[in-house]
Image (tube, rainbow, N blue to C red; front, top):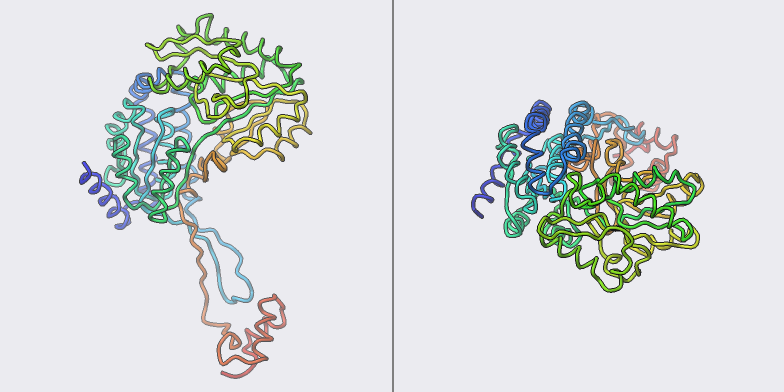
Length: 480
């Protein structure tokens, strides 16, 4: 297996070196292949998502298939524009010359995917890498085995399998891949493994994009449309893979006076969404595996928070299902507030005044997303200025990632680098500086032997003084 992986990497590098991935026609053909796969194999993809996560068909279409199709179409529409060199001004001191920035592919790219959105988080980065003209190795998550197997089967049928390869496996196989030399590594997952990836990349000075996560806060002011706010919070939390999403709301902060109203509205919304017994709902994804179920159970059963459950709490270990569960005023030193929840549990913290939420958020690691519900534009401006996060959304949750004109990525502990739309193309490209000079305009002052008059002219040129630039171009001072 190690030899076959090494051989696959060697073939990818050889194909890139031969220039096979560079033409716009090749890139467009691969993007159309991914688009065809997402269109023609919808049923098989939905089945795999349900097998891995119990994901409802609506979520499979809205959160994975539709976004892959949109990414392909957006890249196809803009590909030639993205590939075109960008002209930039040429300074007079370099006369005569022209200057441009030329995007070029980095080379051989490794994409390591995550299990929670196993189609989207596998193919969305691959789309960017293809558009930028790279050879790609995709390592799907072993945490979603049905989708991993399906991608290994399907992708070679729809794209050039000599330049785009799927390599399956677990920790051992991923470690072996990380020991290879890559020109870019793109990893989606948790910060613990992110550190492992960054360490491996550093051995070869390989740049890496890390799409991680964190505790995404939701601040709810008292002047909102309460029912709409509750629906949008619930959709972003439990309607996104039952909370198993890096941008899902991780905790809510609201005022002590407003908390009972918000809690009551969330209860009504959740009962309408998932019924009186949510464990029976076909619209609620299950926990991915027994290990994560046990982790979430541990968060719920911790002594200092187990009596803070104000809604939900039902669980079925055999079905790996946990109902939407809300906590009120859990201690900040509890496990549920120290780690990313990544599941259907949602604590509500209360403060006396809404502005106190700023300090609470800033006392934690920078999140991947931060959400604020308010009608107060001044509060929005203060929140935007005070809170550092990968992305920010007012009066909704999660949907900012659907805008291809916005970068999606983290900051600090929540990740480094960004993608989506042209940001994906840029993530897998090198912006090469190119200057082209003619043979006229030879400035004697730049060459030895140096002299005081030459230095005076050179100082003037470097300071942008027109007279000295003209003298330099005309060949003053006279001499060698």
